[in-house]
Image 1 (cartoon, rainbow, N blue to C red):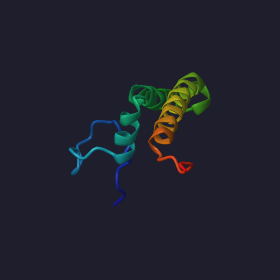
Image 2 (image 1 turned 135 degrees about the vertical axis):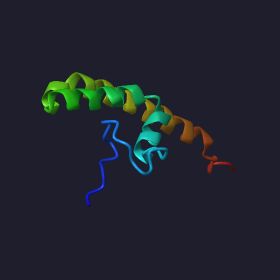
Image 3 (image 1 turned 30 degrees about the vertical axis):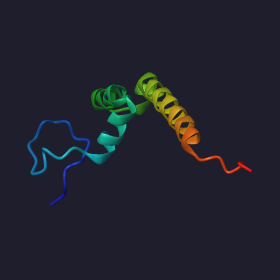
Image 4 (image 1 turned 180 degrees about the vertical axis):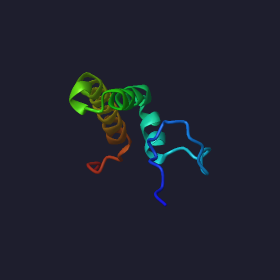
Length: 84
């Protein structure tokens, strides 16, 4: 028996319905979750990624902004190795 897709939003009950998809957890921590859902909804509606390019680009921009700020945050936390 094939396991259901973790991105299936059809509302079908599953055994681990209370367990959230780790990818979705990671995306929600970025603040870009709603944009990710917009991409998924567009793909479900149109079945053609080419028709969802504005949603994909908006999600990509959000993720890039998050990654840039996360990188800056991590760089600030690194201990300076140039102390003499």
